[in-house]
Length: 101
Image 1 (cartoon, rainbow, N blue to C red):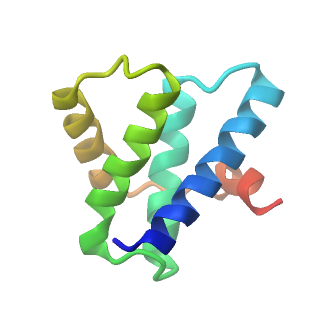
Image 2: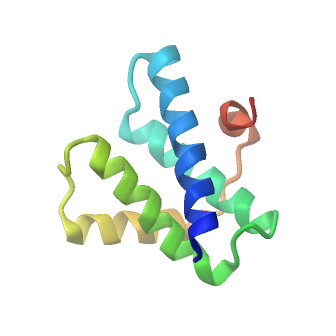
């Protein structure tokens, strides 16, 4: 996964986080999970990410989230979360609306 894709992931993650904080007053794990699954599947479907890069991107997003909660999630759990995000094929366009505005 190249730096341009990482920048895109980071920028969209930050947009979603700001939106969620403003609208909901928080960016909980459930919101993060729903967002991460949908954005990963959208990026794969749009050929921004290859299927082979999806796992690495899931871990990258999980690490961004973890940094925002002061690294409360340990390394083993980060790997497990990335695996779960990678395996879920859900794509909810409504969740992604804030990153396109």
